[in-house]
Length: 298
Image (cartoon, rainbow, N blue to C red; front, side, top):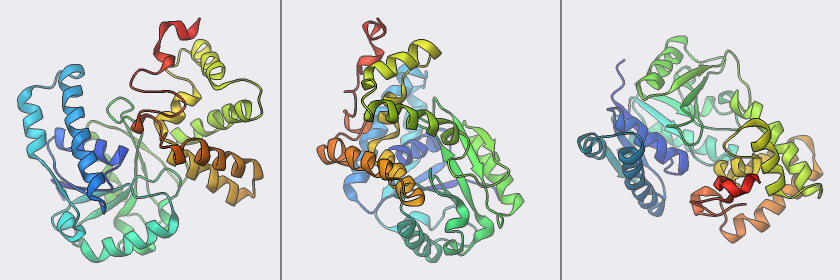
């Protein structure tokens, strides 16, 4: 099957990026969300991405105009998926929400549609049955921002059809991604399996009062040459995702410390609207965080 029509299910930070990237590379894209404010925010983000692509990625006015022409937005799930060849789902990282959503999606989507999840925490087999087409369901996971960290981690479950897996690998290349195929299910894929221990270690240092977050980030940046430290990465990942990660660890491992940290993230950040880069403030303020200043490393 030739993939032409892409539906993005969830218009948040990554959903809006996947939509823009897919449209920029020539695919017709429909963006779906249950919240009209989320769709409005996605449209605003797409205006920002247009300016960024023109200024930083040498995109022509024609390419930007064509990208916008390929994008549409809807609150109606049936309308969103009626012509979909492939979907990319980025709904909240809560298993019951995922399962309920896929039951509705299975009823709405045509038989041809390939379902992919962008879940960072869960593996496809946890809700493959709810898709109604487990052989056409797998993970295609993106990092943030996807045009710089341009990997697409492709992970099936035991029931995924190998031909569908290969189609998704091909599609990921077609939208400018470097496919990262996984041979078996792994929560966290490759990137988050590597990243999680770093963020956990940074959290230990900070929450136990060993060092403040700026000192920890400074140490990491100077020592490794990285663009940002672990707390800058947390801002990029977003506090909502950090909260869900910590809550999942707390519940799965009966980890009291993880529960305390989840509650601290909620109280000190989420409840105050400090969601990270997406809201303009997390540990740092954006768009010009301190760690990008030359004086930060002195």
